[in-house]
Image (cartoon, rainbow, N blue to C red; front, side):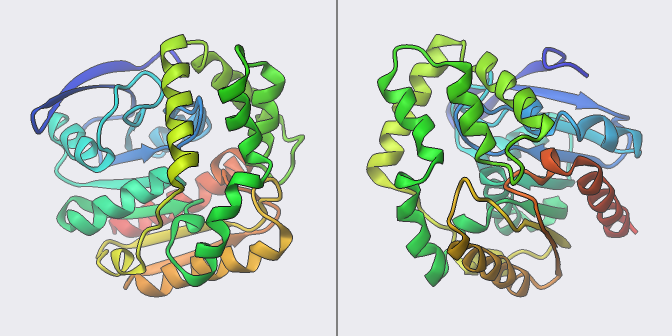
Length: 295
């Protein structure tokens, strides 16, 4: 599958019309797996899941990966509401939801609001967005860490360079020289070549820096009834200091204990995107979980 192999679907969400670009692979008669990607400048479904899509389809699943609202080629909208409309439009009553980072938070909120529509839930990279005493201290520091250099560059430079994007991308990895860093940086750069999207990203970054981020209450996780698998990349040196690692691990443990049917795997020497940094391990472990959740 290639980055241009997706298609558009027009959805009606409330009174709004939302156009969503998505990828679809596998047999539509099999169980559906919906991959919900991370947030960030220039990210897209294919960028996040290019090493996952075919692997899951070959394992026998009907795999769909939408560009989340406001990302890639999709128009803006509310993530949870759009996900529900996306499932409805495809005639999918229940699905396995697999989310990374901000996409994991979308899946979490969807699973707590619509428990009867979620067969299973797989989360990774969302621990900083969990509301614990420790993460409340971490979130304000995001404005002074390496990851925000890219946001500042977007706001101040007339044009982005591939080196800007590569440096930002490497912050998501434990191994900054991982082969996927250059691949993902190129995907992000190509996405940001859309000048209208780049201007929207700049506006969003300005707003986010001004308002900060909100965390998801632990009670939201407690409302989840679906079998849940949490994969925690232990090491994110470009995001947080070494002193913050135990705080993020503690947040992951609090999530695991809050969800009634949840297990957790901690991945050492892995950063924010385990599906990109450890694709073989990630695919094997998640497919094992999906098979067990389906039995």
